[in-house]
Length: 145
Image (cartoon, rainbow, N blue to C red; front, side, top):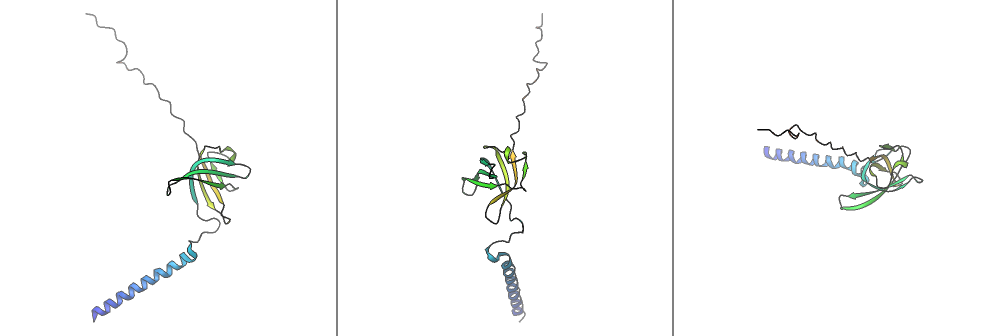
């Protein structure tokens, strides 16, 4: 009799826990997507080479490598008044061929909007100093015998 009670209690426990997870998961996945917070959505990131800068329409096109498909792709990203810049002051300073890192989100119309654009500046190569001549290399007079 005790074994039947234990088995029954285990069955009830698994049933309750299993349904609890299902009930909790319903609220998260309702509609087939994870709900996005107000005022934005998920921030995404892209890193690549600038292939086009349109200052009039305030857009930037970046060529990047899609690691899932191992293909080069291009993405057009809009710039607005809330976009911040690193290593530059404005979109006007970005040139074709610059390497950029862009944090962006997709607005309600499906347009990519930059939150932050960072231009990677190449670091100057350090100058290699010639080693000073050591005292061993200095000419010493030949020993006279």
